Amino acid sequence: MKKAERMGTLSLQVDKVADLIISSGKIVVFTGAGVSTESGIPDFRSPGGIWSKFDPEDFTIQKFISDPESRKRQWKFLADGGFLADAEPNPAHLAIAALETMDKLDAVITQNIDNLHQKAGSSPDKVFELHGNMNWVVCLRCQARYPLDDIKERLENGEEIPDCEQCNGMLKPDVVLFGEALPTDVMAKAVEHARNCDLLIVIGSSLVVYPAAYIPAYASEAGAKLVIINMTGTSYDYVSHVVIYNRAGEVMEKVLERVREKIQKRKSK
Ligand code: CNA
Image: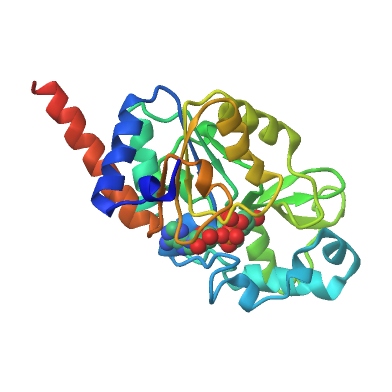
């Protein structure tokens, strides 16, 4: 598809996305950090994002395991609220949850670790978290899982590097650090949903972090249409039916409104 056809005014693009949503049977939404920036959580790569403040080296599994000082920094960062401190879902998360209520959504595949899809009302069994969930902590030895709030309490009581209460193993936030494999069962289910959908909507992802960024390729190769809503260009733009370079919350709110209007119009005919 030519660039001029994919672009167009926002209203026209929103209209196209609404039509695609209405005519599709199985819709998968694939989200990245950009869906949560309007909730106040910085992404990795935008100006002011996480990489402008932190050393990516600290987010590798090798450094986490081998360097107690790095672990201490990470636990302190989490005790102070981490990236998430009181973040609330924004209109993009709420619109995605509303699509599920309207029986329009097969799955949400997310690279995010912020739990905001669930907080917005998406059913946990429809949300596939490829990179884990920051609200949980896991023992690297016995795999026991603890809510982050329990561990925070221990940090507030003076522990600098908490260990597992059951086996004294090393604890780690239950998120995929650089150098770690993605959870195979979650990835397998996500791939299955991507291969079986007829519309995949990418929201707020640079699509450069692999293997997660293969998800749109699996969908597209299996014949699904792609929509991308992102502030900046991605390498998938040229295979997409609609590309909207704009804020996710603003766009998704308009898309949802348009879908509702169109459904209402059909009913009253
Ligand atoms: P990224 O590489 O930082 O890309 C984010 C993309 O979102 C960029 O292309 C931005 O242009 C775009 N963007 C930023 N704000 C908006 C907005 N309001 N509306 C639309 N687009 C916007 O992040 P990816 O998710 O692509 O990369 C995957 C990483 C980021 C995963 O490992 C995540 O775990 C990780 N991450 C997650 C969070 C979170 O859970 N909220 C925060 C920061 C990083």
